[in-house]
Image 1 (cartoon, rainbow, N blue to C red):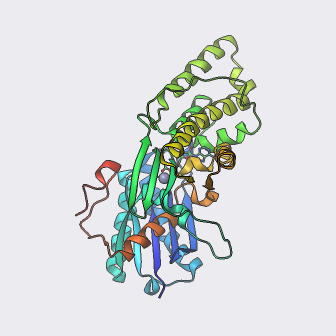
Image 2 (cartoon, protein in one colour):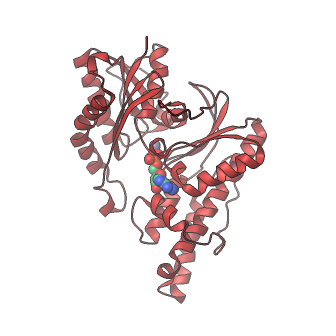
Length: 345
Ligand code: KG4
Ligand code: ZN
């Protein structure tokens, strides 16, 4: 007997639903919210409203594309946190309502666990390899930058993490400072492809162990732009691609230094990447390149599994469902990662 899981993700600005049959993806629908672009960042109130508008059609479409009815679904998995509270509440309330009306089991998922386990989703007709335990994940998103040791579906150890900003924020701020729009990562990535990564140098942080820091490099870009603009008001316009390429290289250098150290320290040579920033073409290339050079087995996700998606929520939900760990209707959404474990009522 196979297990059919409906996953629902609404932690930030993507409304997404996906259906899995065991580890196999039957459908994945993502409605990305464009309303935030004019504001230069996610506006929480607008995000919640857009989720409210999107959630019914998105779930409906995911079921249709999977050719699955609600009767056939075994469990509904949803993101309980971390994320924006208003956004989480929409997915949580919808999932609970659907569970009550359909009589299906409800499973709550930690969004970060979702990003980490996204590399275990399989697709019919594609034999993309998945890592076996233990493996290391470089989890890089708008809110998180972590190196995680994964020993099982529910056994994670954070080996290192950012002590201030996430790397995704550094990409977004870079774009904002240069007036390139939001979200910044994809724009910087695109321009970086046409630029010279060695043109400008940025000082790299000096943080102990496997931890990261990105606030200093953000400030150094700010001062760099301010000083150059004093000399030449067209500096950004004339050097856009080179600035993006050089700044992106600096961010990737920071990420790779600690990842290489983590592999050395643990002896674990299976390495995956996940989260929105794992869509970055420069990072993907570097991980593949370093992996080849150092004898790692690397797992680089397809683009649709990098940014927020419900397939990753469904796969995490599947393993929880199989352990018989269900969510009570009283269990609340939790915006902060640190509060996830303290709120297991
Ligand atoms: O995982 P995600 O969709 O949401 C969070 O959980 O935060 O990650 C969003 C982040 C944003 O900071 C966005 O700029 C970044 O991922 N991002 C990228 C790229 N695509 C998205 N950063 C660098 N290069 C990209 N191609
Ligand atoms: Zn995410």
